[in-house]
Image 1 (tube, rainbow, N blue to C red):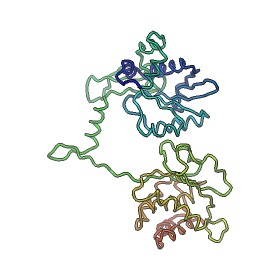
Image 2: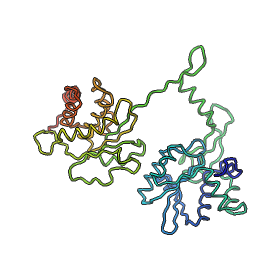
Image 3: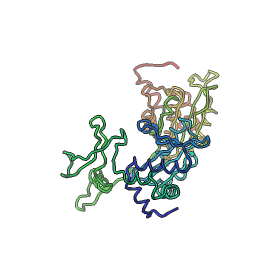
Length: 382
């Protein structure tokens, strides 16, 4: 791989997103691909900028030219999710700012090839000569286009900016499009953030920065909402389904099989019913949760059942109780309620009763449920 001090490398950093994408497309055409640019509005919603086709092979390409920070695993996951929904088996993620270590570690699992700037430089130098019209045209193109509507951005002086005379670039479609190009350098943004967010220690002038410890996170939802997980990005998943339910497609590709638990039992609260969850079934759920929900866990769980009303809130409550430990059952109950995307839930009392016995809480796990049920303005006899 060539050095990052290559003259071509430095010139690539100075290009805008539009010119950078055109250069990548030109290089891929020279490699024998048929390149189809994705319309800008569709590209913003899907994360795919180019579609490559060659010998029956289809590859989706995303070009990220933001030079402020390296591309993280969140971009990789969103790109992979959009690509899989479109039925495209492979992807190419191109970044001018580089990638985090986590992206390099997980790219193979997502069937995505990462190209950073040295790799793009190597491909361009191998496929495009200095006299190539595509290369020359892109480097001479000085336009700055809005990444949302592809119109020119113009320079203007913000009236409310704290520094007089500072200019920014704004879209000519304002107010229909409110895109503006950054007017502060990254170190200036960081300095202002620290001054506004961190108090100054009296008498020393030094910043007092307090970092909150990371904790476990959870989302509890019905199955039809479990697909909308691009923002939360869970690391572990619990799927609770009825016997005979379709289990295909429950696990997204970025969650390893060992991080996904599938429980098959009905949402029944009467212990006399043959369909009621048995203690052995709940013991299996708890055995999977305990090593993953310990006091020091920082995992992100997505717990879902069919409706997100009975089974998943009950299992989510048990997971929070394991994480917080004995004596904090009321706090675990509140954490569970905060994790539910539905406001009207009725956690399965039989599941909680089995868990109380298995964990040896001596009724403490059932206490918050009983108090909460008495305060309800309505009742449901399940």
